[in-house]
Amino acid sequence: MRLLAFVSQHGYEIFQATLEHVWLVALTMLLATAIGIPLGILVVRRPWLSKAILGTANVAETIPSLALFGFLLPVPWLGNRADRVAIAALTLYALLPIIRNTATGIAGVDRAVREAARGMGMTERQILFHVELPLSLSTVIAGIRVATVLTIGIATIAAAVGTGGLGEFIFRGLAMVNNSLILAGAIPAAALALAADFGLSLLERRLRPGR
Amino acid sequence: MRRLVRRPRRMSSEPDGQPIIEFQKAGYRLPNGKVLLKEVTLAVPSGETLVLLGRSGAGKTTALRLINRLLEPSAGKVCVEGRSTLDWDPIALRRRIGYVIQESGLFPHCTVEQNVSLVPRLQRWPAERIEVRLRELLALVGLDQGEFLPRYPHELSGGQRQRVGLARALAADPPILLMDEPLGALDPLTRGDVRREFHDLQKRLRKTVVIVTHDISEALLLGSRIGLMEAGELRGVYSRKEFLNATEPLAAAYTAQLRALEGAGDRT
Image (cartoon, rainbow over all chains, first blue to last red; front, side, top):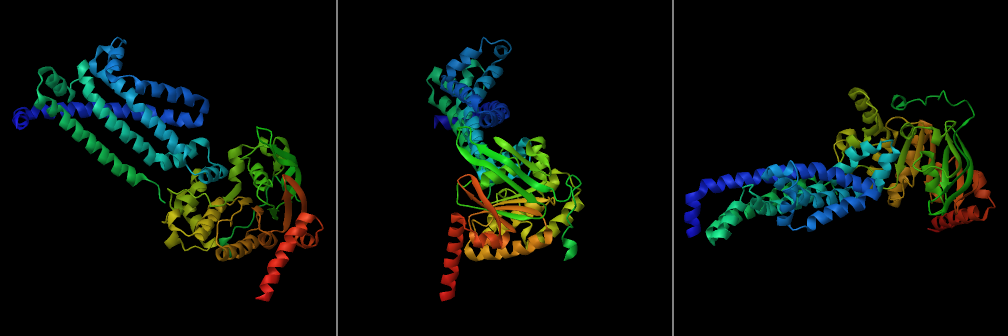
């Protein structure tokens, strides 16, 4: 019940932290999508690059998040502001699922369809934009969904470098051994993750090609 | 009816009597060295329907894909309208050649209308011209346009899909049509219908058509000539009559199979 009291007292603060959190995640996802989809296309189109791209993304995924934030702090320009560090690190984490799903989606396009498109005299670019990407859209969205849920979670840790967001409450709660404070950060974060998961799964289902 | 069908345009680049498709000792080998097609020499005059007949793995599809440069010959050359396919811009070449494949290869995320109008749209035809052409094409392949234009491929039967595939291949009125087992995925009755319709259609359109099939009755009905293929080689090219009397063991095997079928039909 101390949680309820806390929420009624600090409702506005929680609301603001949630907004900060959403902002952080939204920027990250925008960046990760803008970088990840072209990289996913490259993985399919230039097989010799696929090992390098997927390997790098894989390694980034294995670095503990707290350490990654630390590594990026001394980088010029990036390290000047906490949110830059946070977004850069979060983007690195979000890339792998997006790259992988884009590549899987494109590689999974029916061979007959691709063959027909080539045979009709479509250029590689036309095939990509008119056939392959539309047909793999639901798979790409599924990757974005996984990445978003992941990012919402990891973004709480970004508070360690001072970006604000819901992680603030969690770190403060940990320091003060105050469970209501931890929950005030954790519950909205979990709710955000569930909402993002649900919303994107709806989108994913709508975009699934016929059959 | 006549107005639905475009008169074939005589191609300036192709003097009379010149074959529109020509294989000159054309071969194809996979990068790993496996030979799929050995030194095929073959000329297809304009307006002919040539059927490539053979079992799967005989190299029929390989030969077909050399014509629209989905593959490039590793030996000899393939000429279309007198020019080696390697001298053509592949995109320009493919837009002059309609291509129909088994399972039709329709785009599952596009309606019938979008599928059929794709090539004209890529060639930036004006919208009114596309609309007129769509109507012509659906009438040509015997589909009701009001009913079918807004449908998606998964809402069609196999036979309807194949008709749409044919309409799509004919959209920009290409002088050449390539068909790879176009009826392979259909049930026997639908197959018969579509086959007869195509036969009538071909008589009116007078395009140069190359069809790949393993079905002897299809070959005899549709082909003005039959090219018999086996193990990557062209064993011979026959007219219908010649084929039925051919002594080539493979041709004889096919005709024997046909006779057996007919015999069974007579008894029932």
